[in-house]
Length: 245
Image 1 (cartoon, rainbow, N blue to C red):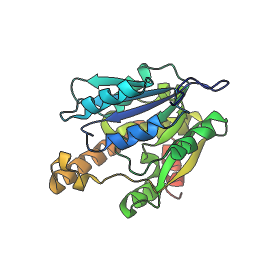
Image 2: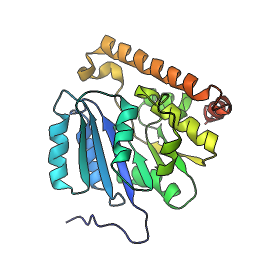
Image 3: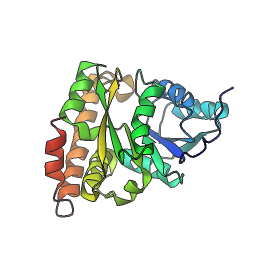
């Protein structure tokens, strides 16, 4: 039997995983979270799914007392889902993960969290390496958009809620960290990847996936504009530096 009791001399760590219509993918992430004893809370936030995602989450919660399932009645966007998860925990250290990750392992999670737990970083950015070419390339070009992070929870209170709406959350988080002088560290996630939107059947096939992707990038550009205007004058330099990673 796995011991889920908190480890002595370690701050509480909560994983927050936002999701929407992930019944085909979320079981893999759930299995890895279940196998990671470093986590004290696992908060799964369903953002108004219309498939069987919630049933899968509730079944997992029966098998792991650390899992809490929170459900939005309607889709509110990724940023709001993360804030909902954050409001449900007092843990000072947060792990953020996407729900559709493939080939994730507990060692990847430890790699994201240990620099923060050991005070070597305030936030980590997990970047795909050696998984699939398209997702590797995306992370090399735009590392600040990764959804895989370990961080001090207090950073979340500095995020622009307007900029974080929809898929702008990662941009708003990255800009807030830069503005506040939080130390960031890149963590390679070797072998990890996730399906592209064009092949996901729950998003209506190739062309619907393309439309979904354009909508997502539109929200990201909007977030960048909102977060960098006046209030965050150093964000452009930050993004330029991170694009070289």
